[in-house]
Image 1: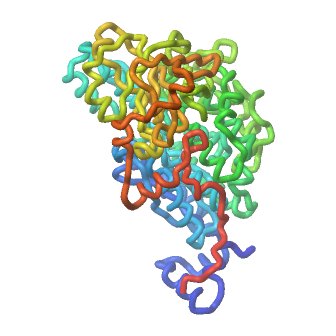
Image 2: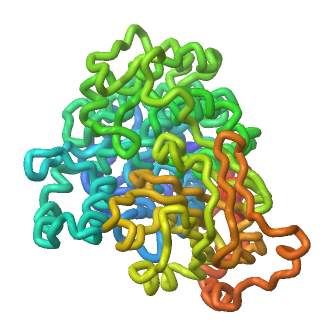
Image 3: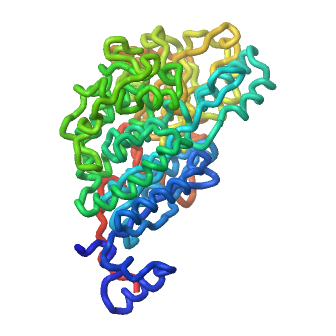
Length: 569
C-alpha cells in the first residue's frame, strides 16, 4: 500500500513513531498503522447547535463506510456555531471556526476528511478550512427538519417567525396564539426547512461538487441520509487513493454553477459572502459581480419559503436538487466535476420533477429574472445586494425619504413610535463586519406598528449588515464599505431622499457630492461601533475584510496546504 500522509507520524521504529502509535492504539489492531488512510470526521455536533444535534449519529454511519473501505475513521469535534443562540452573531465566529478547523486538519495525522455540517455557518466554515488545507474532503449536509404545522397550516421555521411576530405587532394575532405556535415550529431533528442559509449552503455544497451526488437536501430524519453517510465514508477512501482534493473539484466553473443554482432555488443572500470566502481560500477568481452577471437572468423555479410557499420536505419529494438542476442544465459548466471525479452534469441522470407546484418549468417560472442583484451608487461605492425573489415588485423602483437608525439599540428604542409613511426608507447602520462586530442578521428590520395597522407588510430597508436566509422583503444588504469603515452610509441623514432602482442596479443618495463629502459621520453612530479590547473580537475587527469580498480575515485568504515540517517531540 502506498505510504499515506498519516504514515509520516506512524511509520518507523523511533521514539516519535512509538509515541504516535501507542497513544492512538486504544484497541486498534497493529495494521491500523500500516499505511492505510486515516480519515477525520470533522463533526460540528453540539447541544448548543440544535440544528446539528443528530450529527453524532451521522458520524457513526460515516465510520461504518470508512472501515468497510479499508480506512481508519476518527471523530474530530470542531467548533460549532448555532445560528439561533450565539450573540452577537454566529458570523463573528465563522472565520474563527474555519481557522481552528484548518489548523486541526493540518496538525493531525490524517489523510482526508469528511465534513459534517448543517446550521448556517458550519458548512461554509468547514469548506473554507478544507480549501486552505486541500486534503481530500467531502461534505455530508445534515439536512432539513420535517414540516411542522400549526392550526392545520405548515410552518416554515424562520420565515413564519418573522410573519407571525409582525402579525402580533399589527394586532391581528394574539400573543397567546403566537406562543402556542412555538412548540409546533421545530418538528424534528435537522436545520431550517425553508430555503434559508442552511438549506442553501447544503444544496450549494453539492453543486460545488463537494458531496456524494444526490445527498444534499435529504431530510435529517430520513434513513437515506444515514445510507448516504455510509457511502460517503467509502467514497473518501477512494478519493484519497485517487488524490482528489478540493482544489481539483471547486473550480471557477463550479462556483458559477453554484450561482446558477442559487438563483433557480431562490437561495439565501448569505451565500454571496460564503461563496466569495470559500473561493478566496482556493485562489479561485470570483467577484461579487459574478453573482449578477451569471445569476440575474436565471429564473426562479423552486416555490419555497421565503420566496414562495412550500418547504424543503416538499422539494425532496418533488424531485430534489437534481430535478432543479436538470431544468437549468444548459446553463451549467459541463466540465465542473464532483468528488466522484465525474462531471456534475453527468451525475444528474434523468432526474425528473414529480410536482410542478414545487419545482416549476423554465417556461413557467415563479419569476423570470430572480438571481441576486448587485447595486452600485454613491450610497454603495463597493456594492450592495438585494434578493428580488424575496422583494415586493412595486418597490424595486422606489424613491423615498430616509429614516436613519444609528445602531440596533436605536432601532429597537424608536421603531414603535416612528412618524413614517409607506414611502419612507428605513436605514440601519453600524451593522457591518467591523461595526457590530460580525455583520449580524438584522437588516430585515421590523416595520413600524403604525404602518402594519394600515396593512403595509413591506417597505424599502437598507443596511450594512445581513438578513437571515429565511427572511423576506425589499431589503438592501451588505452595503460596502460599511459605515464603520468610512462608507457613505455613515453620512446619511433622516429626510435625505434615497433612490433604489434594481433594474438599473442603482442605489443613490440624492445629496450633492460636495455636501455629502463635507458631512461628519453621526457621533451617535460612531459611539455605538464595536471597540473590543482583546481576544478574537479585537483580532476580527482589526483584520476583517468587507462584505464585497466575503468578509474573511485579510491574513486567512489563500491556502497553506497540508504540510507540517517539524516533529512534536
